[in-house]
Image 1 (cartoon, helix red, strand yellow):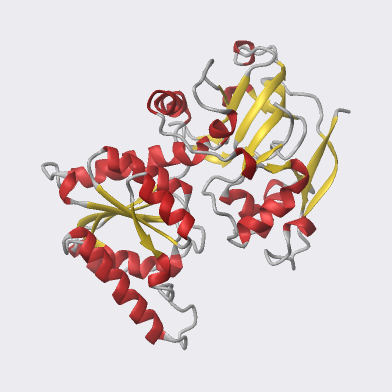
Image 2: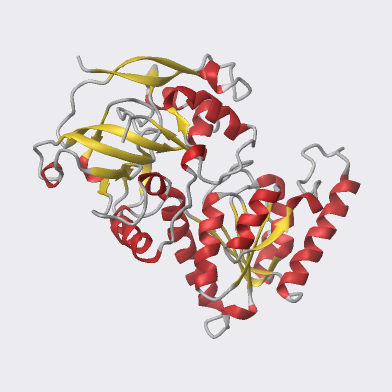
Length: 386
């Protein structure tokens, strides 16, 4: 039986939630990997990207992935770059050679149009993720890194937020254009809060001619936004914008923050509101997001970092002709096109090699991510030497 050194997540007891540190949830141990199945190849992960779905898995919210998969223990981690160790014999695997470096597309099961229904190394049973020194991966979801690329492997490991942004922005833009086909983007604002996906999406909106702005809460991130041509908005100017969860919560501070936030949106948009609002936060800020949205505006999201359940006053959304866009991941057959766009245009993450976490410190990375201690939008970990 083939085994590997891995960070393993075991099924919860039913009473544990996301409050426990990752170091107490993940266990460094020998994991039974098994031999590659038909269509799979044996690989060694090089770099992995720490994404929200790993945080969700450790917090067991919205699901306990082990129980959902019917497995006692799993290895998560589904986005990054790997090196092929042993190609398979299936038609899909024969296109790969030993030593090829590939990005891992996170598709476990696709619908008939190529969109993900189950995600590799998350809720797809039988898959083994990148938090391991060796793993086996379906050859169909390995996308080779361009030969002689101008970009580094850590940059390619951070690809997923850009791929997701490409798909979400394409859909949101087409929806906005459906109602305002003759509008000049230069007269309209695209605003966002969130993280790396929102950042990458705003870069696309800027290329399309829109005014763009984004919130951040640290001087370092505000400076980074400015350097990339995105108007930075200091989140600390409206610290109580999140609506109190309890009905008896202090609404007075919330109203003050909401008023300041809407004033800023009005100033940036010429009083019209955001033509497209990218919101990957969710429930706590949903009310403010809708208030900031222009008539014929598009609210677009591909994540739910702080809350999945939202309530909408349907009549108001109809009258203001708001369109709501919800996307997840991207379409498998679009992967090569997005990769080529990144290679050709340089629309790719800037990565500080010194900020990449070593494999031994994966639990610290998980805890830093959960606690909001990261300065980068693109946290990475290294599994094996390059």
